[in-house]
Amino acid sequence: MLQRDERVDIQTSVKVEQDEIIVARGLRKSYKDFEAVKGIDFTVHRQECFGILGPNGAGKSTTIKMLHCFSPLTAGRLVVLGHSVTGDIRRIKAQLGVVSQDDNLDSDLNVIQNLLVYARYFGINRAEAHRRAEEALELFHLTEKRHHQIEELSGGMKRRLVIARALINKPRLIILDEPTTGLDPAARQLVWQKLRYLRDSGVTLVLTTHYMEEAAQLCDRLVIMNEGRILAEGIPTELVRQLVGYEVIELRIKPEESQMTLKLIEGRPISHEIAGDTLYLFGQEPSAFHTLQLPEVNYRLQRRASLEDLFIKLTGRGLNESQNE
Amino acid sequence: MDDNYFLQSNYLEAKPQRWRLTLPTPFTWGTYRVWQRNRDAFLRRWKTELWPPFVETIMTLLAFGFGIGVYIQGQVEGMSYLQFIAPGLIMSSVLFTATFECMFGTYIRMKIEKMFDATLATPITLEEVVSGEITWAATRATFTGSCVLLVLAPLNLLPNWWVVLLPLLGLITGFMMASLAIIVTSLVPSINAFNYFITLGVVPMQLFSDVFFSVSQIPENLRWLVYFSPLYPATRLARAIFVGQMGPELLGYLLWISLLSLVFYSLALRLMRHRLIK
Image 1: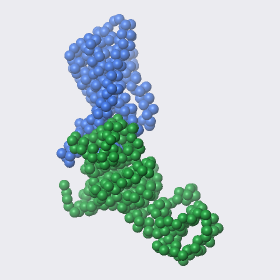
Image 2: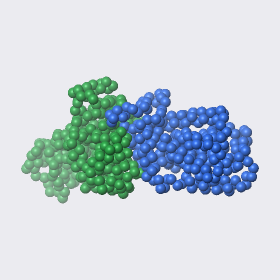
Image 3: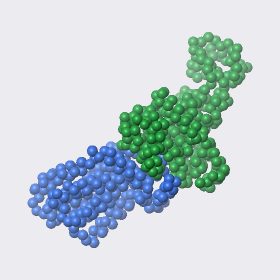
């Protein structure tokens, strides 16, 4: 085992620091008729939960597939766990856990067999596989379902089993593609808890999602992608503050009245956006809305700026998209 | 052991260059792991999987041997009709088992259950997944063929001890047929499209490959068509083994089957990679 502080991957000549779990530089992916990922750079550090956010078709899943060595790169360099994905990928995959978007469990086998067969793919011996399988089932509250058929499990249980399966090789990095899509709120909370537990026990997580709440709950750092490019990168709360502001006021207001309102905020550190029937005011300082008298309207909401505001600001409201067509 | 396990695998690593000439091998640890998975799944369903080969064989024998066979008073190539069709029945059961396993079985695992994606997230390569499918189908076909052989035994239809070689022939033939089926699976747009191959490939292969009647019945100017059937050399070999007429001319059939197996197998791996890795 190499244990140097810094090393250079010969094939890619990317400098990789010891705590850098993923280094992507100029990463591109083209299919026959379109470019899904148009040159992105990012770095994931040890023991962080890194989020890749974006609307459908942003290139998230394509990026993820390159990360777990499924799709070959079109261009760029990608080093995962110290090895280039164009080199010996078995070395990467041996230390990697993958949770795909679909519950691709083996319905011909029961719950525990799913884990044991998977362990065999990693060359883990029988006794050790049993030990780890029981451990993983316990962690995900599936011990009692040990001998159940896959089709007997609920959606939440299937998802937990897919994640449990990804732990069987004690991965240093787990890659999750939309881990809670389609789950009910309680099932999601449980999955989030377990993911935070994993990160705290030293595993690095990379996940894609289009749920802003999920990103806020889990991600230490994230990138927002749209149309194959990274639009913003950073710590969620800081990004929101920098790019959106501190507080938001939403007013449902008629267009003619909005002109009046805009006059009221002139000279204040407030930016605005009109989307359909709603006027959004973004306070750029903690007390931007202090002593501001707004007209009476039947819908008015004052709240903290959120990732959702940032996301929509960067990727558009979809409305604009249809107007452009 | 864990750390070196992956390096034991002797599959030459798949390179992005598309037409690089490498000889693929199904003899790797990864292939064995996938084979094991398929075996475990099969054994879990043993109640539904074990009896059909026996029952089907008995029914086929009743229909063809005792039913149609009654009309055939004379001998075919110097043996009773039942004896004549027995080796062909063994080989066509190999054909059907291997083909269906690698068409419907593989397609469902690949497309519907997305099991390949899960396996490919481990150190197992795509070539190993496909090889595991093929070697398992060959194993299962051998099992079915052997069941047919067992049914024939009490009917005193096993004339000599050479028949112990038949399972081995079944294994090679199963490998060839499974590889051919994987080629089809790698090309079909949907599961319904298998009908083309069944109707235009599998069924004519069974009907016109010396299984039910001697190839000498076919007009000479059409007989060359039979030689294109991959089942034909298998049936010829099986019959020779069955009646114990071993001779050097059989080597030609064996070589032909081996060559076809190699070509189909290489093509199957390549086409599957082309289909799945985008």
